[in-house]
Amino acid sequence: MPKVKFDILESTCVPLPFENVDTDQIIPARFLSATSRQGFGDNLFRDWRYTKSGEKNTDFILNDPHFNGKVLVAGKNFGSGSSREHAVWAIFDYGFRAVVSSFFADIFMGNALNNGLLPIVISEVLLKKLLDLIQKDPGTKVKIDLEKQIFTILSTGDSVKFNINPYKKECLLKGLDDIDFLLSIKGLITSYENNKIQVK
Image (tube, rainbow, N blue to C red; front, side, top):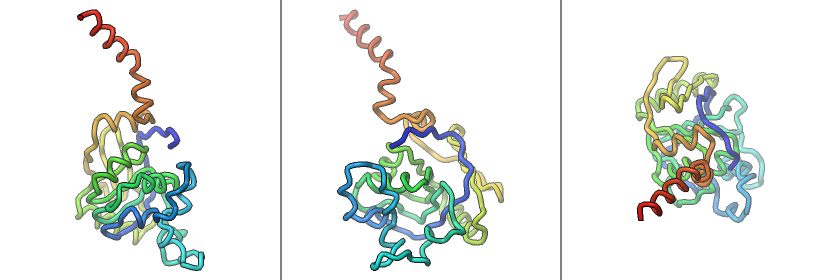
């Protein structure tokens, strides 16, 4: 994935008010043979975005020009099903930088954090309110402050603190993956190993 630092994001949202959306719906299995992470966004929600004849399904939200933004707001239990990392690649490659829901499958959440996509858990009550607001006004914006771990609906002032693993938070803020992080502390690792040798 491209190295993208995540700090403060203000954006409109795309609503996907369906529960139990699984990874096969996010990226169908027939598209998993690609060797590069790029290009998966073209097939995000492929079977919902297009008809069997290959034409755009005008009823699907991603094909509605009124809705756009870098935040996907999804129903409860998003990312269930298989552990395919490709689901996150597709969401990220499409242009989303955060996904908001009241519950994520654990493996999906881990894959998201490992690939620069921020999953934010909010209450079911606030999720419903946000989805309703977006449907009524596609211009509804949210603000995500990763440093402070605060999620805000700008039009209403509703604001909540969200949880995130401290290590993954640091990686997102600096735009690092696990290998980049290890390389960034190479000096500390070398110093630690040298000290161990001296103690022995």
